[in-house]
Length: 352
Image (cartoon, rainbow, N blue to C red; front, side):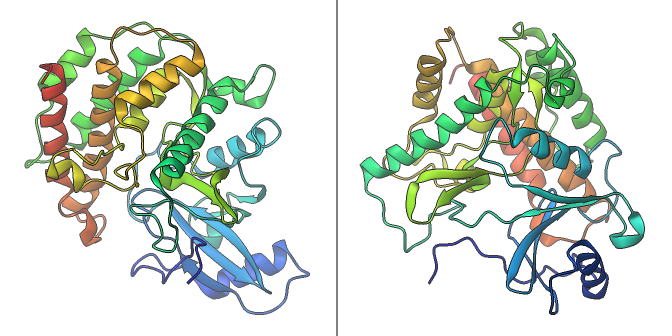
């Protein structure tokens, strides 16, 4: 079996019209021949990722989820423009091939990019990939280093600079995510009032401004199949912006489930940070601070923020399921995940 990350069957209700895609690609790349084959990558609670194969070549098509979505969410063309602007200064992104705002094609904005072949460390490492503890640690450091590299990218004078809104990033995030939570609450949802109040009362000033990914996880990383310790690509730039790097790190650690974490958190694990050799959350923070020369008394605010933001994202997805805007059964239990994250936030606030 190949170590390469491979697409599978398209999920029911998320099909693309093969004839329409065939016509679009023939117009886009007229030299290619044959019939298109459309497959879909796992995940996809947010934007959907398809592999479109034609004439022995594979491409990636990204589109927003089906159903009603927030007006400002899932801006596919913004994501494509960020990737395109990033390519000259951060080589770990794919080449953009096309951007389409013609809704007569598939009913929404979408873009096409090159496929970065490699290993994607999803919930579990491929069984065929055997890394010892030392190698796992080296891989972990390599991944964290790519975030640190991103935070060092000089965006002055580039299109990326326009993504920022200036000082006050922390305040905007706490206000914005709190507002999103209130708007996505369902009758069976967690309260989060105490968490939102604490975040609002304990906001630090911005620690800096740089380009941030906002969804930096192992399952958005592509590894070299011939050298799995080498990161060759970073994917999913939907939420990238200019903002506070410590907030970006807080978002990343919300997904960082350790081997010793309680069972409820283990159920949310979607990346292999539980393996022997992986850094703990505290070690990641210490490593990041050392490498960037930053000093910080406590990371609790950023950790609580990351967990709260994750809870809002989960609740927003559940809201769509609750109101029948999506029938994807994967989302039925998301309300319980959000409730658990509230308890985790409160425990951190209380210092437990």
